[in-house]
Image (cartoon, rainbow, N blue to C red):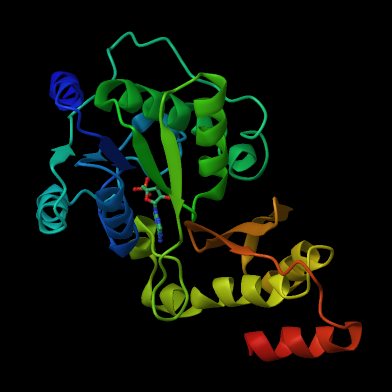
Length: 267
Ligand code: AMP
């Protein structure tokens, strides 16, 4: 892969890279289309990175659909699908650890997760030598951690963040949505609707409103916080952990509208 990337560079071609863990859905495909617009050569990686899973998480159960993924990549005009069986030496002992932005939210409930993410993304950047790498807004904290790593460690590339792709009912697409039972799937869109309703209340009230709405709907909340103008949250639906984030209106509506706004948009 690395020699292919070097040859592309010698020919003056620019490389755009989309890292994924496979089980590709429309969200991933939108990143590939975005990458297609950004460079001459598009590389997609499919690698279920073991070091970003906790010991009690779903590494073994994570969906693997490589044949279908390859067909989708081909259809969208990706040039290379990089799907190595393993990327770690047996005695791998070097880690990339972002030590500030990784701490809260998903980092707090998934210790070691962002160390695994930063390490694999750094390795992939060194193998694929991209000029541009495309990530999804759905994983907002991941975007922040990767941007910081690229800045702090002087990776010579540009990060592009593409908008979250949703199902018709608002649920953010995710490879993990397939874990949901039909009953859970039916309730899942309420998560996004609650975030949208709470975000309308403006930066001062959004996080508390989201927590109270989600609790009222019976979701187990992992976190709901305002970060850089976005309302970011994670919930558990049965055993499945879902994340999402939406932009928060910079100006809150007039106070007497609050209660009505909230109730209307979630019932
Ligand atoms: P994953 O395969 O879950 O590791 O995700 C690979 C990339 O796809 C990451 O940059 C994600 O943020 C992005 N992604 C996942 N779901 C979506 C979505 N619904 N919309 C846009 N990007 C997404």
